[in-house]
Amino acid sequence: MTEIPIETPVRRRRTVVVFFDMISAQQPPFPNKIQRVMDCPTDEEETCKEQYGSENCTCSSNHASSTAESESDSPVTLKILQSWAPRISHYFDKEHYTYVGHQIVIQESIEHFGAVVWPGALALSQYLESNQEQFNLKDKKVLEIGAGTGLVSIVACILGAYVTATDLPEVLENLSYNISKNTQNMNMHKPEVRKLVWGEGLNEDFPLSICHYDFILASDVVYHHAALEDLLATMVYFCKPGTVLLWANKFRFTADYEFLEKLSNIFNTTILAEFPESNVKLLKVTVREN
Image (cartoon, rainbow, N blue to C red; front, side, top):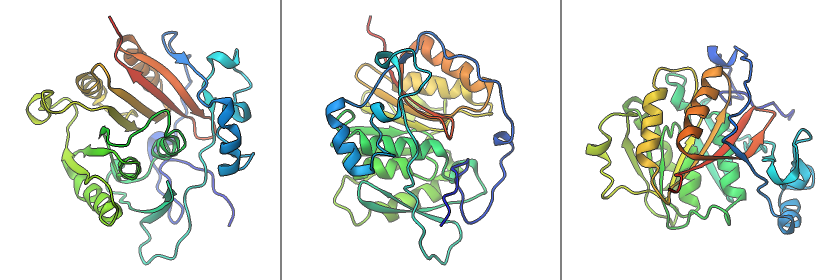
């Protein structure tokens, strides 16, 4: 089968045209406050090559950007690996993936933007799988905001986390279905699916006295929509000392970079990895120490 380049949303049996992916925007430079780091230790390169092969090894020595100023201040440059696997299915809207040794079947819908698999979810799932020592999710409390189809939450569950997957009310039915179907027969912490409208009812629905999370996960939550200020307020609310926000996003518009600028003005922000073929960047965000 000919490999098909990953676009957004990721589709292989039908075409979904989304207007904001048809528009190219000039990409402004990243804010100076954002750190750029190498992420893959040299002594793990052989393990990476054995797992993925030399061509697809995710170690920075193989995929470092040629435009980087120096190896010490550059993010690792990666390629989204082909985790999608063709399967015979009676449903044209189901996609099959393999992460952490498990086949994951995702039910999609074109009725909502949040109910299809976007490239940021693939990038974040791949990164979590490949960097389990650096970001150990076992027995950690993890919140995914804008969980969509639930792919990232399912991967986090497989990695042993206590997962709370959240999204808008209209997405929850499909999200719950995917998470239930893919985790029901596995020996893992039972995941939770909850409604979360960015910026609304945070104190009432997620009181910080009992809702402290080790990791916040987000993928492709920033695009051309009117809720960016509410999203930023939600990230600020949940990101407390000791919390790590991992955010993977395809950068499409100037507004995406403006959001990143605002985020970097509030938090320590580090680019962990870049996926140039899909224009996805993966960032680590933490609270600044006083």
